[in-house]
Each structure stands twice: as structure tokens, then as C-alpha cells.
Length: 123
Image (cartoon, rainbow, N blue to C red; front, side):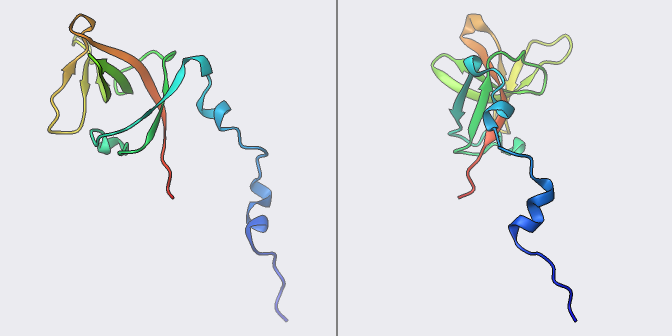
């Protein structure tokens, strides 16, 4: 005689339940310094950031080398990677063929915040 086993979602997830999902607690630790930016270009597909994705941006984080950041270049909002090696002036890089852009507040290029997470709808 065959053994009866529970099947379905409940059986698979019962021992892994973690309680209520609180995405704000996980992804927005600094709500007064956090905002969303929707990507409108494919400049960081190498980082799996695609057109239409929402970037969660935290202005309270100190930007570090290799972080995905939001920068303002005049009136333009940029999503780029911060390249700031030792002894070099910080620059913003994207996927080729984009040229690096120097971070220079006097020239109107300023860092605005660090992208801490990306949201993508699958349906």
C-alpha cells in the first residue's frame, strides 16, 4: 500500500514560514532619506538593472567604490557605478560605449544617493 504524503504549498512552506513579510523594514532602513528612481535606459545591464526597474535609493549611505549610485548632471538623473580608486578623482561609469563622467560639483555633476536595492516586476 502506498504511503500518504501531504502535498501542496502548505506542506512545502510550513517549516520555512518566517511570519509577516516587512519589505520596508528590510529595504528602507532610513525612510526619511530614501526615494525611488525608475530606470529609463540600459546603461547598467551588466549589473542586471534594466529599463523599468525601480531603484531604491538611500541618501544616508556613504558612496563607496563599486556602488551603484544616482547622480545629477545638470537636470539629468544618472544611474551609474561609482569608480573611485586610490589617488583618482571619482567618476561615474556605465556599460560600454559610455564614457566615464567625472564627479565634479563645480561642473554640475553631483552624487545624490546609493542604490541599495532594485525592484523588478515579473508579471
